[in-house]
Length: 425
Image (cartoon, rainbow, N blue to C red; front, top):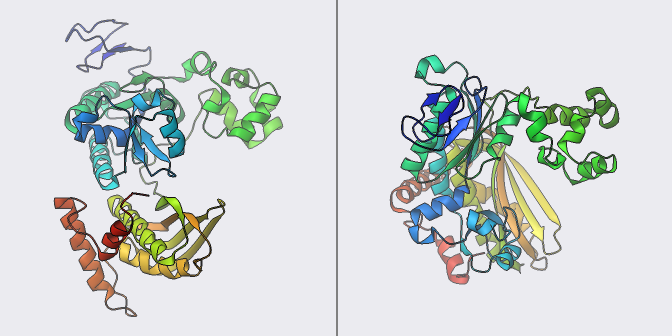
């Protein structure tokens, strides 16, 4: 069976060119009409949105991330040609690609696009599980009668609609379970569509390194290598019981994945465990007042993300990293969950003051919330009655920023921080 990605028409047998639209983006697979689980992955998501909003960046290397001592959040495919990768220290990324244009991330904009993509997925099936802001799974089992189209055809139409309406591209992996769908989506990026079944596991997965399987980290990979297991095919050649005896549950997991086995379901009810934001400074900071200003910035960013995901958290955690890379975390459990920047700041400020004597210098600060629950009405604090007024003021600021942009309303603390240091962290 063959699918045309340009018009979503389906043909029997293998077809090199679509007889309907003459398109040549054809997908052929014996099980194309049977596979229903897909992994949707946005291509260079943050960078793609920035290029969409500024066409002058289209043919230029773009990095979205922090300052000189920050890390790469994502980068476009042009920058990747020079070796830039997500999570790479910024100084290394700029050394590899000195002509790159660096853009600070705008999570309010990115989450709006993410919500739109999720809404489109949910029109196809209620079985949607977003695992990050730019990727998720969908199970289209039983939807063919409802939509009168094969799952593969629905996905091809989805990809074209997202590219036309949102100005970004996605890559799709279609399979019979989550693991294979994820592997397939990585096989044809960007703007890809790949199909992978259990029957393909031996031939397609076999030549890949064992590290291609999620969960095989450097330590486990080193152990496997010592035992002569370098490729997925090496694992496939071993017996399942043998792998379990030698490596325990890790061996069982590895053998199952190597052979295309994954019993996890697409779970739309799965909740995020935490929401957080952090910032690495260009230079180490020991001044308590300056650190408070940086704390406010990450509180606002965390609040923005929490609101975008519609969650509030009971546990507020402050994260600090010293100039010697020693990490500190301090947490407080609230009586009521929050998603408000003001509440996060007022909660974390005393935690920060205990760690800032003026002699310890820090290179990073972060704030996060966990023990998440669906956001409801702002709680009234009998100990601090003014919290309701602050909450109302913050909601008004959110509405103004949503309508007129992030710079429409700024707090005095944020403005002072900008005056103190014009160069972004």
